[in-house]
Image (cartoon, rainbow, N blue to C red; front, side, top):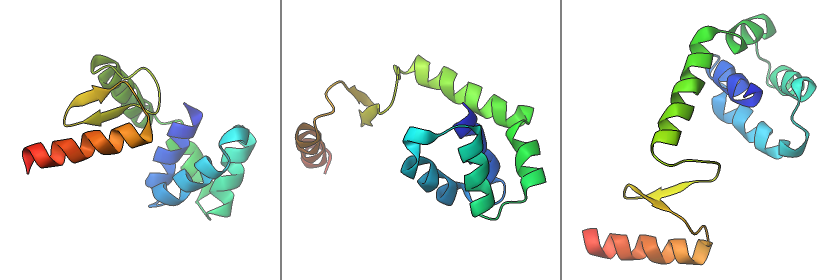
Length: 107
């Protein structure tokens, strides 16, 4: 939840993708201190970042996305959909075959 809040707060300073990249690079050590370190490293306005992270509007976005995900069958990440169908097997080779078949079927 904190990482999602931080990424959305970074987005308000046009640094979403950079922040996201750093989160994934550090995925095994994400905590409050690491989030602060990433924000500082990216040169974010820390006062605005902190305010945005705790804002109700960002919490509402995350809550909405969680509710919407549950409604369509997302129970964790990664969850993959191809043409609106949830894939139950995340085998990369199988997914490529399914995508190729969908492309051929739908032109």
